[in-house]
Image 1 (tube, each protein chain N blue to C red):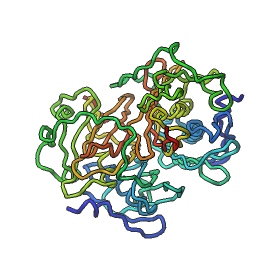
Image 2: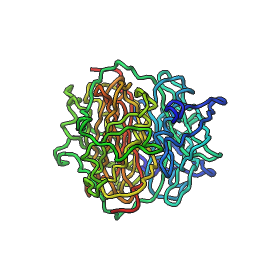
Image 3: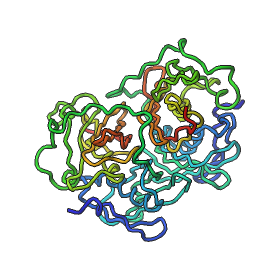
Image 4: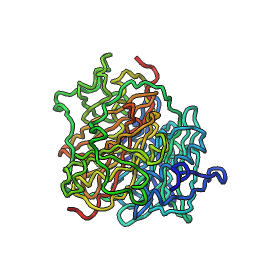
Length: 262
Length: 262
C-alpha cells in the first residue's frame, strides 16, 4: 500500500507538463475518487506556481479516470503579486478527464479570523461509527472515517430525509493534514442524497473548493449538507474543520442524483 | 440606455468565437460587474452548445474588464447525452480577463423538488429600502434593489458584525428572470464583508454559480452570507429565490476583503 505522498506525486517533464501514475488505492469500483484527482492537480499547480496553497480550485469532471499513467497540463493565466492562476487539466490517453481552474497563493498560518461561523454539531469521536466490516481495498482502505450515526440511517433503509452526511476523517497512514489532503477530504463523504432516498453512484459534474486556513494536526471534521435535490441534480456543500476548531476548507459540488430511487 | 438583451448580446464570428460590445451601463467606477461578464459568457456558451441552461459556471476573474469590444472563446470539452461542457474565456486586446468552465444542459421547468431547504427570512418588499438617492449611472441605474434594513447598517457606520446582505432584485427595464439574468443576480449584492468592517472594493477572485430551476416572473430574492473572513479573504454565498419560492440559483465566491478596514 503506497503512501499518499507517492500516490499523488507528479513528475515535471516539461514547462507546464507533469506525469503521474494514478493509484487504484484511491478508487471505487467505478472510478478513481474525484478528491484524489484534485489532490494530484493541486500538486502540479503548486509546483508550477511556486506557491504553497490552493486558495481556489474549480473542477469539471468530464470522464472517469482509470488507474495508470496520466498527464497534468498546467497553463498559467495570471502571475500576480499575491496569487497565481492557471488552467489545469488531467489527460489520459490524449483525452481530458478533468478540467480545473486553480488559484494558488500563500495563507498565513497565524491569521486570526475577523469573523468565523460556528462549526455544526458533530458527536464526540467515540460516539461515531465506522463503516461496517474491516477495510477492504480501494478508497475505504485508505481513509479512516467515523460517521455521525444521525446521518447513517440510509445504511439500514432509514434515511434521515435531509441531504446531510457528517464524519471525522483522517488517513489510515500517518499523515498530518495539509493542502493536498484537504483536496481529498472535500470529496470523501458518501453523497448526501443517500439520505433523501437516492441509491447508487452520484457522479460529480462540478466541484469548487477553497482552502481557507492551514490545518492543525489531528482529525478533520467533515460537515456535508445540501440545499436542493431536484430534477436529477443535487448540490453538496462540505465544510472541513480542523482539530483546533478552524474552518480550513469549504466546497460545493453539483452532481447527478443516483438514478435508482428508493 | 440599452436593453439587457442588447448589452449581453454576442455575435458568432467563427466556430467557438463570439464578438461582444461590453456595455458601460453594467459597470462601476473601477470595473464592469462580474455578473454581467458571466451573463455574456453564458450567452456564448449556450449558443455554442445549443442547450438552454447554464447548469454550472465556475469563473476566475483575472483582470478588470473595460467597456468596449471584446471576444468570447468557447472550447468544447465534452458533448454528452444530457450536458455540454466547455472552457470559455473573455478576451480583450488579446488578454484573457475571465476564464470559465461552463456546463450547459436543460432543466425541467415543471420539476418538483425531492428536497428543498427553506428560504431565509426577508422582510416584505414594502419594508425594504432602496440605496439612497435617485439611480445614477452604471450598474445602479440598471438594477432595482430593495434591501433588508438589517443588513444595511454599514451605510450608517453600524455594520451588523455578520457577513450578510439581503435584497430583492429586478432590472429597472421590463425583463422576466431567465438564465442570463441569474448570472447577473448572483454577483449584484454589495460585498457581505461591508457588515464586518471592510471598506472599499472587494475584488472577486473566483465565483461558481449553479442554475437550479427555471425562475418564475417577478422579483428575485437574494440571500447573501459568508462563513469566514480571515487573512484578507472572504467567501460569499448567494442564494436566489424566485417569486414562487423556488431556489433558482446558488453561488459562492472567494474574494479579497477591502483593504481599508474600519
